[in-house]
Image: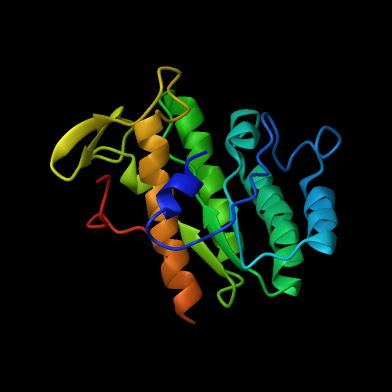
Length: 198
């Protein structure tokens, strides 16, 4: 939602939003992300693709080891589409959720997403948003320290972000995008000393 704004003043980009509400990789009958991605790449060229998904899948999952391995396999298949095109891909992990049970399933999903991403270090970078949006103990928190000032980053539902949160996440992604496109080395981002909101 805020990527275009976050890129302003950094570099000129054309952002193509492709988000689809209530979708994921576990329900291709409802929305088939692999098919959609293949079709888009046939007609358009991209220097960078940013993927952030999995909350719906995690919320509806058992969080079991079997689900975790199945989900990693689905994510691998999605990333292979981009790897074949040699497209730099940023994969953004999920943040903490207020509901403890949901949050545990998110951790399982993040493990699967991260492990899938690290299989393709030449093109994929995993961005850990969980740590950045957690408190000092690794738990869910609404308030985030941004340049020494506490700001509300999470919406009232305990799942989504506020405008402030979305902008902060977007700036983290932009930071990783600039470094990924200018470096041949894949690195995990962000670190806690990244510049926050201005």
